[in-house]
Image (cartoon, one colour):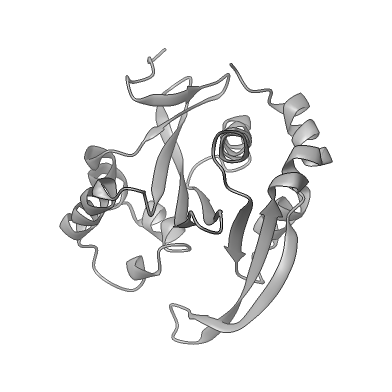
Amino acid sequence: MSQPSENTLYSGRYCCIRAVTESDLRALYPSAAVKSILAQYRPWLRGQTLDIEGVVRRHQWLAELNPPAEIEVLVLQKSTQTPIGLISLSSIDGINMKAELSVAFFMNPGSRAAVEALHWSLQWLFGQTPLYKLLFYVQPGNQAARKLLDALGASLEAVLVDEIVRDDGRRSDLCRYTLFRHQWDNGLPRERLRRLVPLVD
């Protein structure tokens, strides 16, 4: 079995989570499958030739910001140390204590590793940071993502009309969901996740 790297943030039963590195970007972003998934929350990746050096420079610039404007972690299948997804916290607003959470699994999205990673992310964000509110954006037709957000106890806050331009040039609405700290702390979804994929201390 492969061992977690030194910069591992979490090593659980099914997944490992660590900070994204430059080598990760160079290995993952050129993949068409990965790029397609990431483009859901990184619009600048859509419909253009990938500038990997630009992606690396952006990553380096973000790493220098203090306080951070964006945090991205890599999720790996623990048994093989194979990357299966990325979780990103962006638009971090320290004044109003809110941020946007994006989850992109390009392999095994319904696996226990993916669910454990999501569980850890929510528990860490509401347990170890002062964040009060998480925002999620999803296209109306993405029923799988919307069912997941419903299951997590998130609320549909608004439907933003003609919010984004799709690959075919047409505009699309965007659903904005929210999850508040008290909803997570006191909600049944947290208890269900504790039973399904308990976190390793």
